[in-house]
Image (cartoon, rainbow, N blue to C red):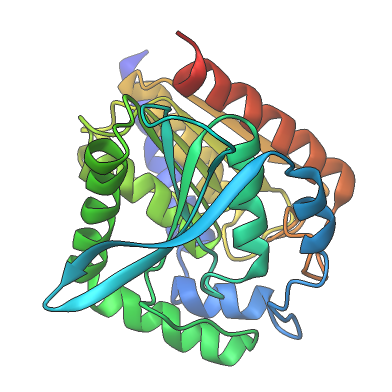
Length: 283
């Protein structure tokens, strides 16, 4: 029985090596976004739904003298001490769509901080987005410090008793990595079509409940990779839910992109709200 299980894992590993990991992940993402733009033309509808929310630009930390500025949204009139959530942008950077999603999270009762891993830069060009994402990946220690400072801002400055993390695309991968980076400090993690982790040793520290949202037609994050991720999480006994929208494509939840799938996006958002409600907002 154990030999059969081991053989199945070996076959999966070989399949992932052949199909799921070929080429640079950012190159695969660039191929998915070919012809796409990051201008947030559809975000206004989301913003209109987020009534009763206060917003401001805040400085949440400094790295080597450089100020880190983020977009903070919180329930109107809300006192300090509400649960918080780190919001990690797609590879476009902090744009109007991410700000709208941050307001949506605040409308659910969370103090939401959109972090800026590009430190002031954003773009609507897929070519430039590839460069920005690649640059961030080349300075991972700085990105990790950015996220630690953002977490400290919510937990210490805003007195959040619990802190979650959510991200999409480039930010989806960093959402998972944030939960691994600060296993004692993250209480819930949501990753939308971000790069999974298949190494059991790297996933070992995960303590936060995880919601993973993926697309069946995503070439940047192949379904074989997603199923491998799901299986490793199961083997490790992690509290994780993986949702795959079989007919959707990468970035299907972004209303400003040309791959937006309204039904799938709404269903995924309802699942996200329920998940965050259970793990961050429930007393």
